[in-house]
Length: 239
Ligand code: URA
Image: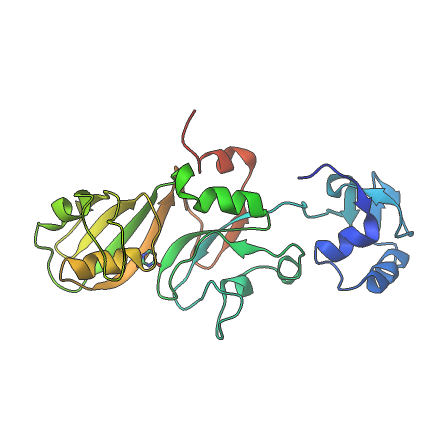
């Protein structure tokens, strides 16, 4: 949260409650907004979101960090056609400015832990190699595992097709004849699928189970929830 006061009409637009300042004026005239318990009808009054209630409910924060359990069939891009992960969020989250974006991407057919935020600096920090946020994936593959994957993935020498630097060592554990758990310390394009392709196999299902020390817990597929500061800290190494 920025802690900086803003005109209430501007907040209503930026946090996606209304589309235009004009609409904000109507919204205020309808007596739907209170600041510190006092009704407000003038758009120029300044506040921070934690002071504001809308129809008796606390106003959304001006900084969101969302945990989504992504189902298969949804894309992470704002531009691609078809079902988007953003369609799983409330309409007003989708109308916010700055926009809510995904922290990195999961493929359309990948399920599991996906973070979304409107905080550009946080997004940068969570995706930057310097901050090193490990991610845990559970993969199901087409052919039985050979037993050679662990060494290959841990080698620090595996060069994926059309790349110029080898992959960082990844942790690997077979969890079944055709299933494995991988911990990656970087995020290259289609990385898990390309790693198994390099091992002569094919991923048929992929699920992200963990990012940093954060897991999905009991969040059902297709559902989202906001993360608090304590949970946000789980995304970074313990200090
Ligand atoms: N690796 C992949 O191949 N796909 C994903 O969605 C994530 C990691």
